[in-house]
Length: 193
Figure 1 (cartoon, helix red, strand yellow):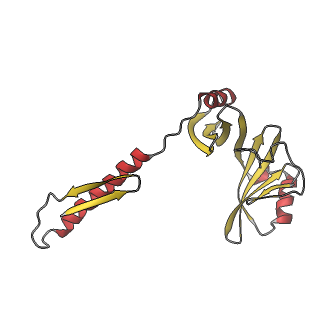
Figure 2 (cartoon, one colour):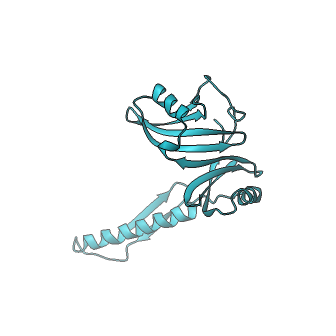
Figure 3 (cartoon, helix red, strand yellow):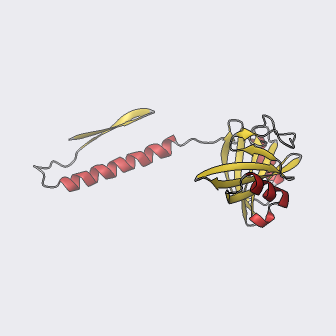
């Protein structure tokens, strides 16, 4: 008996049965062995094909300068040219984005509902009255602070972004033109709406 496993980005792995079973005597034993081999193969392939993120030294240095007391730092990609560091600072889990040159783009910090400015809560209630607030974030960007609200409305999750005065900046993928625009509202990668 022979088992071939094909992978999208590479060759296949072929296993030959080491058990020579007669009839159906130990079929469960053979299936268990094949299942274990298959699982081991997927674990090996996933680990070997995991994308390694190369964070530029400029981004790392800028992060270390801005957040010298950060702990449990994990880097990822926010966009093709922007890195996101998720970390803990003073017991709070947060994230910060830096471009390849080390320019800080934004810092996102979770906040409680009572920490959201009144103007933002009123605007959310007026525009999205039936929405349920799932999580709120204070997002510091160069030159401004915005508030990102994760809501559930009509059974769907949405992300809204408000200025500190309650103007809608971003509504689930559509930019709103009704209100304040900060310096980073247009075309800024990894920070700015």
